[in-house]
Length: 186
Image 1 (spheres, one colour):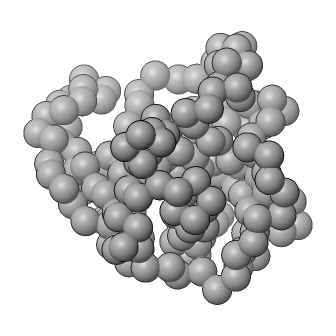
Image 2 (tube, rainbow, N blue to C red; image 1 turned 90 degrees about the vertical axis):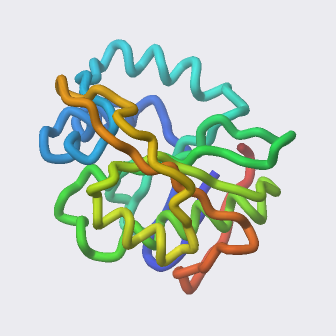
Image 3 (tube, rainbow, N blue to C red; image 1 turned 120 degrees about the vertical axis):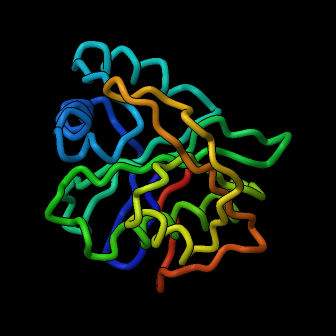
């Protein structure tokens, strides 16, 4: 599956993308934005991919420029058709693309796909309470802070607070100009 819009492409993750995923997640600067503190290992990531690729409760995409340069990962976890919701995750692994508005576009494309193609009604995520960059991005798209999870995770030996955020289909504010699903299949 490929979703395109505004010079960005979301394509289904492939086994060959695992070395990039490991590189991005293990980059100390990128990792500070993630709610994990254990390094990824390539062998374990390859095994994870073999299970995840057939899991209908998730959609994993690689974010690419239209020239085909991979720059990150975005996806939906715990997709529930019954409750019509899912969790969103995103990692822009190539730091040269930070601060250029790509986060807004990729989230906007994923939300449109979630609401229009998958028929979901709500997308939610968990973010650091002090990540002002992602808070600006998600507020622009219509996300609301639904609550604060106090001392919810222990990251690098420190208890941290997280925000649970969510956006309903009726609240979604698109920020992309173009959108098309090039190939269906997932």
